[in-house]
Length: 207
Ligand code: HEC
Image 1 (cartoon, protein in one colour):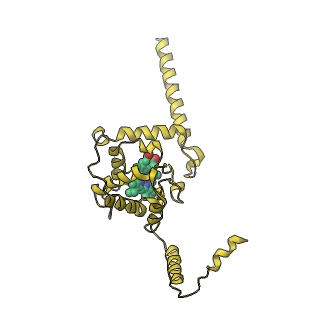
Image 2: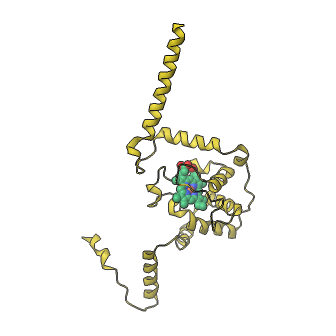
Image 3: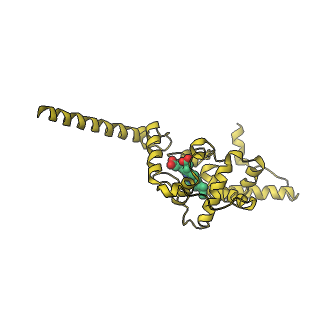
């Protein structure tokens, strides 16, 4: 009887320690999104995500053949919908991407490239809960499953992206009023309309 009580106490203490360790791991840095997820969190999250993706979805083959045209469509689609967080080259080093928790991983590295086509497709279609990764399955201009499969081809291409491709993508990145004004000024300047002057507000950076 006494032994049984001891076993129960040991089990309860062990469970409480695990809960405290996980809570401490989750609550580090006062829940600031500027922090980097701990190793434990990353391992738990990636494994939980893997388990949550149904096995048959994981093994689905890409039904879309990657023609040159399809690859270009996917590239420009990525520039428009994904690069705001993932950057055109997939590094994830954008103002929004680096402010997220967890941050978007570098899509060129093995941890992403080793995911199956089916897993990449599932993530694009369904998003990842508790992260900034949105589900694109019914997302407005995102044109259905074909578009997601084309994006899978593009993600495979990311480690070999050329400078020319990246520069073309920049023209398709979403733009704010400041960028548009700058483009307009550049185009006016190239047409020889008015001499181009920098707005004075930029000068204080030089001081
Ligand atoms: C608002 C920001 C945001 C946008 C927009 C976004 N993503 Fe993500 N994405 C993320 C974050 C954050 C993660 C990391 C999720 C995680 O940790 O499981 C992620 C993860 C991924 C992954 C999994 C990579 C891996 O190794 O875990 C893929 C693939 C992906 N995104 C593709 C896309 C594609 C394709 C688009 C555009 C159609 C897109 N994302 C748009 C934020 C974004």
